Every structure is written in C-alpha cells, then in structure tokens.
Image (cartoon, helix red, strand yellow):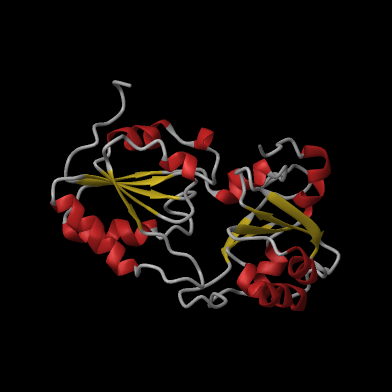
Length: 256
C-alpha cells in the first residue's frame, strides 16, 4: 500500500505480532514482514506469522522463555544496534504488544541511546485479544468498569515486588495476570489473604488465539489444584473476576 511508511535501511521496527492468529496482524506489521532484511523474533510468535517474512530475509531467534537458557536482554539490545548499523532494515518481532510486558521499552531506549531510528508498531496484547478468543471480555457492563494487567513474575523470575496486594484485591474487579503459572500458588495466596473470595471465577487461558488454545475454568480457591491436575502449558493468562462467568455464553471460537 502506497500510504504505508517506508521501512528505511539502518532502522529498527519494534513490531507486535499479536497473541497468535495471523489475522490479528496489523497492516504495518505485515508491511514490516514483507520489507525487512532481517527479523529478530521472540519465542512467542506463532510459526504461521514467521512464515510471512519476505523470502531471502535473514532470521535470528532471540526468544526468552522462563526456565530455559535464553539470550540476555542486553545482548538482544546490542544485536539490534549492530544490525541497524550494518544498514539493515531490522524487524524486531514480538508476541502481543511490544510495550505490554514485552520489554519493548528497554529495547527502544537502547536504540534511542545509540542514535538508531526506530518505529513502534503496536500489536494486540494477549490480555485483550487472547481473552476475546477465549470468550472472555476484558470489560462488561454491570460487571466491571476497570481491568488491571499484572505481570506474574519480576526481573529474577520470582513474584514481582512492589505490588500492593491489598489495594489490588480491593480495587481491581477484574485482574489479568501474564506469565503467572510458575508463581500461581503465591499469587493465589496473596489474593485470598487480601480478601478475594475463594469461590470467585477464574480462568487459565493457554496458547491463546492459536490452534492449541485451551481454557480451564475454575475458582480462585481451587485453581492451584486444577492447574496441577490439568497442567496447562505456557504461555498462559490467569483471569480473575466476574467476566469469566460470561464465557459459557460467549465462547465463540473453535481452534482449528
């Protein structure tokens, strides 16, 4: 399309690929895939999206997965700078949205400090698009007027510090936790101790918006045991709140 911006040599585009379904790619994301010289992608980008890269373009996997050997963020930052200084059109492709628990801000800051021109292309974050594919709205009238997104782990892979769990439990009618399975028992314990009812509706959505999508519905008091029995795979979202109860009427999508 003639009205899309030029992907200039020596620049980096930080692009969100969405939660999985290639149909959720933006026009700018597809434009980047069709024009990049090299793609540096993370581990959560669906293979069907990776396959849309321009023939002949180079591919570098820089995925970070919990519990596995992964590149350090500083190495990823440096590699983006190196490739751009070689005159490449560098596509940094990330699952979901680069600026929602995607460490896109760290990469953009590194590029800015190095004087590398960059563009941020937002993507559909899993906490919105992934829930929609699971038949769970992020907000619903007469249910919630606020939704809170929380990361399930901090810098060291442990429960994130600095969260006011009492305030969160009181003030967030619906909570969406990203990457929380490894700390699930602690998350649940904090919420229960802060006053959330054990019979509150909960869902765990794994591999959202992909053919492998699975949704486990349970309650806050039973979710730890349910996950231990069902063993959903990462990446997974933990959703707490009244919107989960709407899924039995809104479950519209069948993977396949």
